[in-house]
Length: 135
Length: 326
Image 1: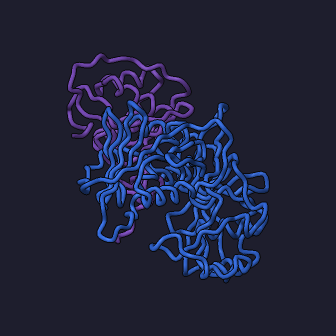
Image 2: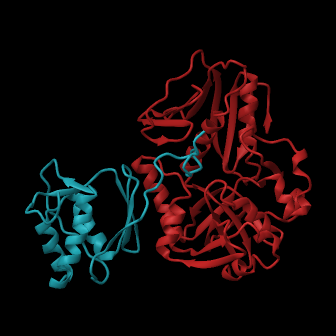
Image 3: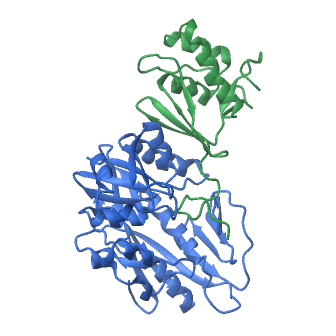
């Protein structure tokens, strides 16, 4: 599934994606894949829409209300593409209400940065996150 | 350790662990694991009740829905945690009555399985998190008005760099295990658990004051390293806590002569610090850890310290690192 496909089904953040917010920016951790992502202020505002469910049209409309211009369309599409292609969001199983999000800060093009390597899925011990050596 | 005939008490950082049960050999093994945490903390302590028992048969390995370790898998449910290890030992946490139990099956030679220490580690890390601490697999040193977290994978040089910095006047929180949390004003705060170093006997090449460690018994059959108390070698070489200001990523490069220091971006510091803590696959626990580690990482200045094998022979080898930690 890609955001470039003509789908306008409501999408929701997967329950096992954990978010930490810091000064209006956020870090997302996918507990299934152990990949984590950094999003800027505008990116976090968009991601929040998916916490209660959002369509792509809703994302575009909301982004425009926050100050997005036509030049931001590509960045918005790229961010949503990552969310969809990495399965951070999935099609909502239940009907959703399209809510707004209060945007704090100054609008800039949204960014999402996927960290290069996932965190270890298998670790040495409850304290040591290092990959165990073969015995 | 303090105790009576029926229970022993161990203080492990902010925890007061009360151990009951038998058999004796298992109790001694668990005591060894708990007593590693030799830094005394001020009261109050969270009481942790741990019962030891003999199992009749080995436990089957569980899936590891919460955590998959090399020698231990941990599942979670509403009733608590259940962990099993390769030896067939098991550990469960009764979340309703707040009691831990470790059960160990008989072994062919009668010895206590080595992986019991993994189960004890689960008891401790879970309990530390309950108090709002994030366990961090890192060394840390304090000096020059800063506190640096020294990070590397196991065997990556944390202990040797810690020892080298101690003899340069720095004071160590530890060489491997720390607890991290945020203060009420959002500052990172690191606290020590263990004031011993795991040194290889060949460290004497660089640090003659450690003496001949080959005469000291190994603490584990799996390693050549020996446990040495920091203060026994370097008096005033330890400190109990610090406010981390720097993140040092240690990179050993056998092809390199000397060392060099490169800056890390905020993105790289976050990446590096997240890789120093275990994040179980439980949404609530993971969120709690991220809520500590992410803001802490944001406040740290990061450097990458690349060093060759010869670096500790050179008196000036650490000067570039010391300059970066201003």
